[in-house]
Image (cartoon, rainbow, N blue to C red; front, side):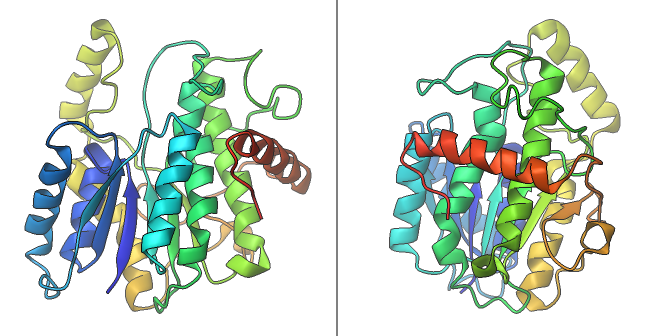
Length: 305
């Protein structure tokens, strides 16, 4: 039975991707913030989605609470998943936030936005690798982080201010998370022990979801208006985001590595076509970001191979 971990599955794109995979026979391990009645609500929704699958009687869905602002909670959650599931076929990460706040530290001292968009995702991927390596999907298991693949610019100060403590801005936070994602997952993909795993950094495009909930009303109102005018539905977005996972379940991933490289991270556009890396995607940048990530995750007791 195919299994997928979906982080950020309580609403929006993550919820829609969970449903799309459940329709195709995946058992979903849904991860998100907890509140009263949420586990039952999520599992019932997934059961309804999987009722349309030929494997409906075989699927088993579950909900795992985790506040991804806390790397300690990420470690506890991911370690529990690996303990209980020796095989995982896909890891999809969609957790995020849209705010105009300045550098805002979590309880562990890391910036909130960078934590949701990158540190926590790097942590989940690193911790769940043992179960992903055991997958027998024909096209190989998939690790997908849904953020800004092929859309973001490079963050130039990745060496002098890697955690954005001195040069924080909305743009730098967005570019930093996207740039770091390209670099980190490219190195992860090239490690010999991960050769059979497909690492994808995708962009969802403009989606009519609850994105921007944390925004002040004078910004949230026009965002909602524009979403109604031109935003695609979460389910339509999910159909594109889930495509390479479903293709790997039966055969080839259907994507091409950037610059026709033989290995490394895949960049996926909002329509599931292959995208490009930034011009600053260099070996020096990869090593610098990897070392920074190792330091940040190491403080939470999470070691990188």
